[in-house]
Picture 1 (cartoon, rainbow, N blue to C red):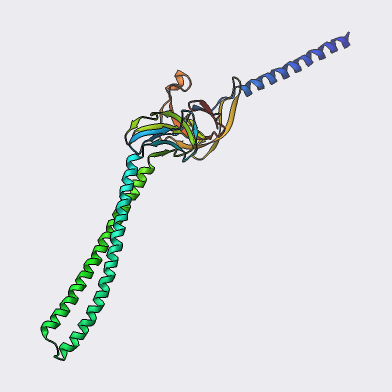
Picture 2 (picture 1 turned 90 degrees about the horizontal axis):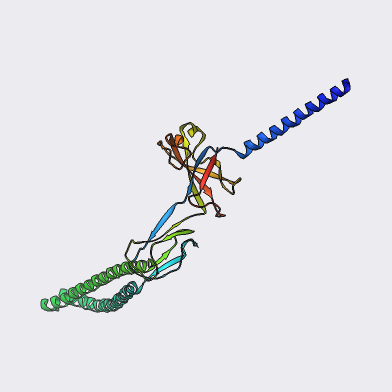
Length: 306
């Protein structure tokens, strides 16, 4: 009778142990599945609106919304007819100035040879005049011719300087025309995704008109909000863990780096948590998160784990 009693007691204790172990497992599982994040927010990108740097008709526009474009890729071309005509005119003006300069340089060389001849004549008549073998009138005539020839040479040289200055002005205008022509090609300033188009091929646009909006989606920014008591847990350059939805019961995790912390408090945005928490003062932070695989989308909610 006693042995049966002991057996029953042992079975009861075994049941308690197994039940307690099961409850512990269940509780640990619940804790693991309901890990609460330290902060919440949404992913955003650094968007850039690309505007036209030239006026004219869009000849072609080779991108669509959602396209991935590489840095320096030509995405649109504006009519180049008038910039090309302007450039051709300036090139012709430069050629004309170069031709005039060459002709003037030849005239300068001729004038220098003429001066050498006159210089010899001046030396000869000067010696004769000193020996009183030549009249003063003849001496003044020869030396006067020499002075006139020198003035003519100086005038030619000043004309050459003026032509060279003209060439520099034309060259500056040519460079400006080339730059204007180059700006008819719209290129992507960085590798990224086209978010929105504001124009289409065939439209006539003006200088400064927005043409498209794009963003670098290889790295997104999680703008999250923390309470004042959490400020001591964050610092610029700190690497922290970021979570975002994978499916109904799981999420993705990856590392991000805090790049900005607000210096002033604000009321919790309406998208964050419950009504009670919305009235609290919080501080915004920005976390740069790599996204080379494209799994994170702009506007997607994210979680922060310190």
